[in-house]
Amino acid sequence: MRTYWNTNQMLATLDAWEPNCWVQVTCPTPEDESFLVDELHVPDYFLDDIRDKDERARYDYDDGWTLIILRIPYVKEAKSRTPHTTIPMGIILNKDVCVTVCNYETNMMIDFVSYQQKRNSGFTDAVDLVFRLFLSAAVWYLKRLKQINVLIEEAKRNLDRKVDNQDLVALSRLQDSLTYFITSIRGDETLLSKLKFKLPVDELDADLIEDVTIEMSQARETTSIYANILDSTMETYASIINNGVSAVMRQMTSWTVLLMFPTLIASIFGMNLVNGMEQWAGGFPLVIIVSIVISVVIYYFFRRIDWL
Image 1 (cartoon, rainbow, N blue to C red):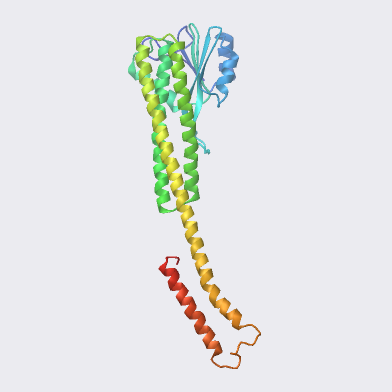
Image 2: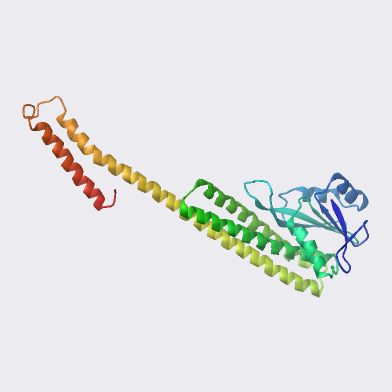
């Protein structure tokens, strides 16, 4: 699906492509790709790079065409091992061509268009659009991080009641999401620092870049904090599980030792050998009493050292 936006004064849709308009392509169909390649003459390998979901954030220039790949946050609707992840969004620029291509429909772009329409000021040029997309990505990273933090706190509350494998797996999946976030944010920051020198930046763009740098830095630091908290939480619950296993093994060992002495005494006196108590009527009661006394002594000893 492609949408043509007039960016001069306010963000308004156009019926057809015009020079210097913004072409927003979401989940491109073969028809959309044909329009970009055949009519706008966008290099086809640009679209191949954007289609790769693992493509890193980078800048490319070829024969007047500029490709900027920005990593943006994305939440998968279907059940997935990592519901919070990042995806590439391509920005393609030329003299009078400005195209954004994303192979996924994201809340970020819907919110971006809505916010720019509320601003009612449009974009000064394509460079302004690029850096505002960077700013929107940084803001949405922070929004998604807040959602991840809520999930972390919920999993921790569940684990406080009972250590459950399902909650531990959920925390592990959040760890994967934070890894994707921190890697993508660092890539976007590196790309932003390069674009300062690659694109024609004016004074207004410089102020916007400073805002983007601050937001990106905050997103990176927040991600690192949450990742450290999550690592600490996982280590804590791993220690709790190990302590629980150790306590169970200690109790089982203690009961094994406790039952070993009566068994040992009964085995010794039950041997088919002469022990001097075969003809004595009190031999059997004596063995029983000795076994009970030794067992009681060992039981209280284990209770005293907190093994039972």
